[in-house]
Length: 252
Image 1 (cartoon, one colour):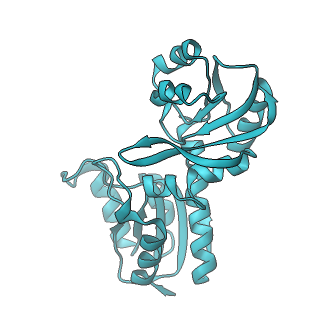
Image 2 (image 1 turned 90 degrees about the vertical axis):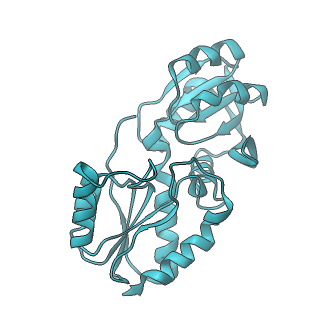
Image 3 (image 1 turned 180 degrees about the horizontal axis):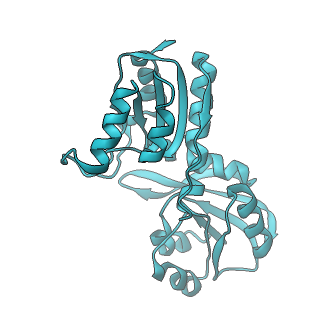
């Protein structure tokens, strides 16, 4: 067993949660504590009811997620939220959430982990948001669009959709995991051949065509499995607790 306070302190320091500007509704860090003792670590993308029910099978679990149980600020604890909290409390389940701090982490984050999996080299921070870089820009061994789409599909385990607006051969790539398709115009202004994200609004497909950039939609869920896995594995190595990943894909 390990103390929850020690694990939370390790995670907070590692992710620099207090230094990263996030969306107003995100509550980064410990969202629900337990009695204080942790026996194992579970990683998942979303703190949805099915994930919480599965995590609750073993008492004293620390569930690390990218999308937590709280997103709307103060809200009524009823319906699904009540059921999730009730199950968690009964099972002595602790829940820790990390949104943008995990996306942006230079070693364990979604952006860098996906970039490494795609073989992107010489990455540098790009695409500023509130004084911080939201994505990573780098180079790859030249690939045709279809080849790159197949590579992304293999890496994410999903069917990749893309707007073929840019050059046939891809050499420079911008990666911003999640739902960053709405940033396609700014991505095109960076002069990259390809912009990889999870999903985007309808108009982003046409904007990519008109702005001359290849826009690849790898799936919001699929592009954000990398960070929680890397984080849980890292914490497991540090503290000696076993970890596993609960896969609950949305297909989006």
